[in-house]
Length: 464
Image 1 (cartoon, rainbow, N blue to C red):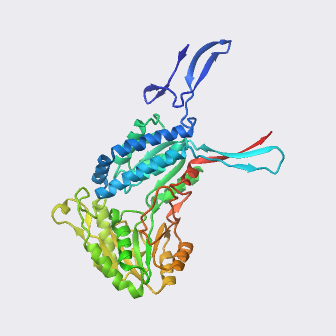
Image 2 (image 1 turned 30 degrees about the vertical axis):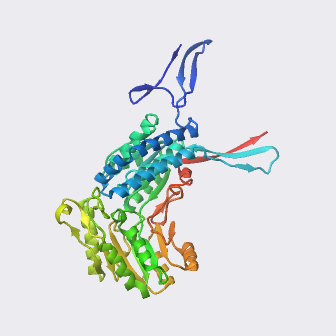
Image 3 (image 1 turned 90 degrees about the horizontal axis):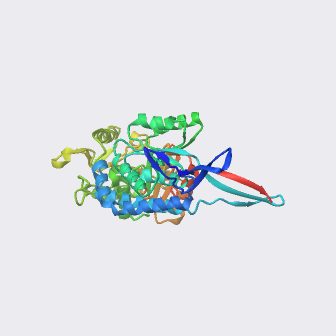
């Protein structure tokens, strides 16, 4: 009698569950031909799957500085921002490691005698994750971790503009004990992503990227009748009312508009300011923007790094020029920075635009760069109407001392992420992430809600 193994990626390996099944001679039940591994990532108890994520979190934490430096080199964000993203990824791994012990179903009382009803979760199988360049390790983690803890296999395609950090995440997960074949990383451009979306064995797609590409992903998934989850950007407002602390409000807009070079789907791109304080607010924002230090992210004291590439930087400057031609006033920035070491990269000065009207393209379309458009509003009602007057609805902020206006804003703003006296880009991993309108489609990412997308619910009826 022999014990046999799985052949995975050219190597003979045991089952991740440690369980086996027997193969017996049908002519003689006493003749045991051999034992074979009972192989399934989904069959491994969920808390044990969580142990792999906990170990991966520890490994990533130990290598945080090195990976943060690699992130700055490949994506451009400042080193403190990169360190923050790696730290967030450590937290994501630990959070979903803990979810392994919390994959709860429910017990529901039956209207019939001696019938026991309960629900349980099952993984979908193989799921695809297509991720962008602007958060090159956090987004791969917040898509992959809930999928993995639920028992799925994952095919991850990171952006070709920043693929290294996703590779590092995969390396760490494998080192932590993730079995071969459970997480697969496919590099390439849109063609590679299209192959994942179209593959018959992929039962769900989670995508973060442009609105145009997201629409194509949704159509393809609809034809195959598989689940789809889309995050496609925003045109996020920060409303500043006359009763706000204007210096604090300017700092909030500065953080959300220019942090990560404005290359965040939750970045503030519209500051909608009550008319009586728009001049005073603009002066404060312009002064803060001009004081920001632009340069290579590995240098000390840098506030704003480069755009991801030359084409992206050129597009930002072109959009600003178009806004100026339409009547907006360039209060700060608006140009490429090319002096000295900046000439080696793709740097755009932090830009503040005044006199922006709702009809301008700059007020409607995502720029994804360090640009804040200041729009005057008559009062709270007018500001709210302007904030909702776009097809996106991801994140929104209000700066005010009024509890009434804050609560009305939370109820009436058309956005999935609502902030009061906080930057629009400050989100946490343990709560749901997603928007409304053209920003998002499908179940929410992050938090416990993320598990819903990667599992199917079974309802069990038992007569006893």
